[in-house]
Length: 211
Image 1 (cartoon, rainbow, N blue to C red):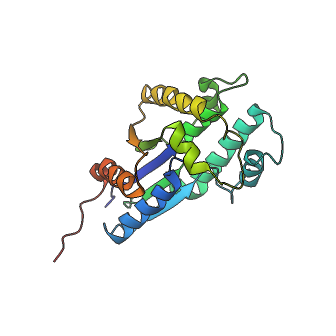
Image 2: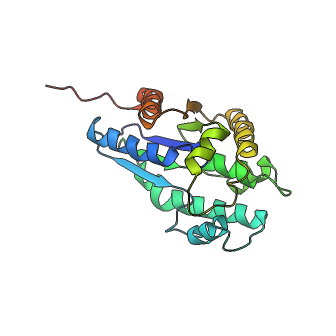
């Protein structure tokens, strides 16, 4: 008997807390909700094709044209889905939590001659998430949280522009049937985690009864 799978994506600017929330949500699902099959993953996925190449580009260790970067992201995503995500979501009630996905590609690669339609075409066949949570933070929160980070990445100095682009890309994907929730991520980790749990609870199996 098959069980409903759930593909959840967390998106947001660097400093939005999405990676920490992803880890805490995974712990909540396994330790408190008793979900047996939870996979926490991320993109770009370093172990698969073009993963380290993308990390080098993000760290500004190599210079890459935007079109090449978009192709590399699409290739990494296809491999990530083929070898990890899709086999895990096999109709046995698995939950995948992915830190960044297609929305990030639309935000960061729709520039320098590439439109969002172009980026979507490169990612044709990519699995549609059941829900994407956008972790909304103010530029001030982003700056505070990013202070002291050792490595500046490619788009770190464009936070406000990227935030606006995220909202444009969200509307673009919503028009194509993607489900989104915007989470106020300016509060404490506990406050943000509570909001995320409330957003995903309708998609989860019933909590086990306590004796």
